[in-house]
Length: 131
Image 1 (cartoon, helix red, strand yellow):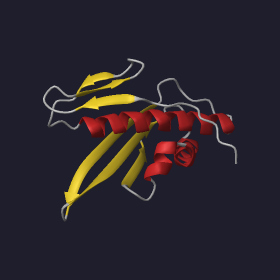
Image 2 (cartoon, helix red, strand yellow; image 1 turned 90 degrees about the horizontal axis):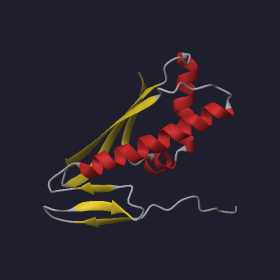
Image 3 (tube, helix red, strand yellow; image 1 turned 120 degrees about the vertical axis):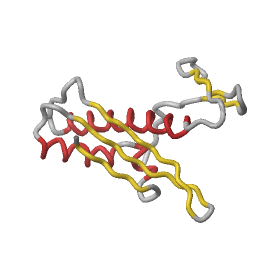
Image 4 (tube, rainbow, N blue to C red; image 1 turned 180 degrees about the horizontal axis):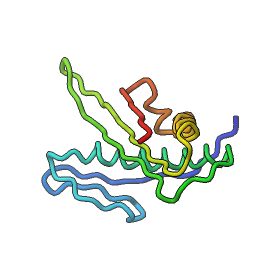
């Protein structure tokens, strides 16, 4: 199978009270003073953006027109049990104007397309809800 690089995200992170993250292209420039749940927030933003793109691709494959106001709300929990850290996630998906059964099929198909969903599959507790 031939592989083709589509994109590379480069960031530089610094630690401490004046810590932060900056992307090499300057589009991301955020302060991350400790302690702060920024990693969970950034992961949720990145995953939900990718996941929305996957929903769009699944819809295009099925010739389904999506509304402009489709949205994904991501909630990423950092947990600890028995001295180990783990993540739990909830993706709440809104696809107004698309018949519920069809929207449900799209959000399920999107998990087989989205690289973030594939990466976490079986590794974190995930609940995806059509709202």
